[in-house]
Length: 211
Image (cartoon, rainbow, N blue to C red; front, side, top):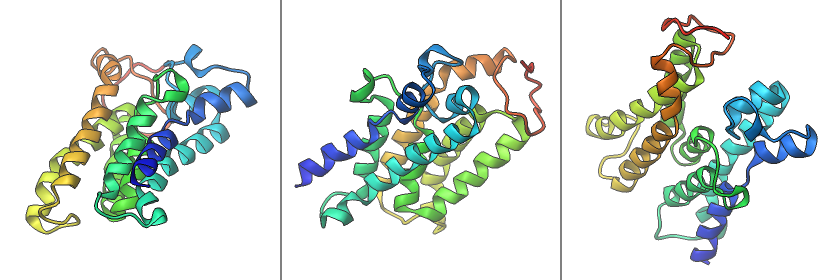
């Protein structure tokens, strides 16, 4: 049963919601538009607000449900975060979409919400604050990922939000945050050249050129 649940976590993460919604309801392949990414941000940009919200919720819940699988199956002995990590890997390298997936932000957040909600909300505040100042989803995702790496090491020592001595938590959070940062490498290049895509909200303090 353990092996089945682990495989299920990966397959759940592999469901390419943005790609399928675009193809079925809009007759559009997200890979042919915008950034070519199949995740939430490109869905909002190409398919609109309603489709973007649906894709975000679906991708978020993939991580949450995967993390809850041990409880649903009555399993013990393996951290729920391992199941969440497999969902993140599935989202990033989906077997149902030629292993070309999203940037793992929503699914990673869902994983944390399923295991340690207050810490997830802390990172959401970091994300939202950065978004207000920069007007960039990509920058907000990168800053939140960097904050996750720093705080998952620091907070347990301070006795704040995170338990001390949970090295599975530390390892998986750092791994997932690293995936998020790596998947945004093209965005980092555009940020440096002031050509990154913006959302119509916030201060755009880095003075990216609006398109």
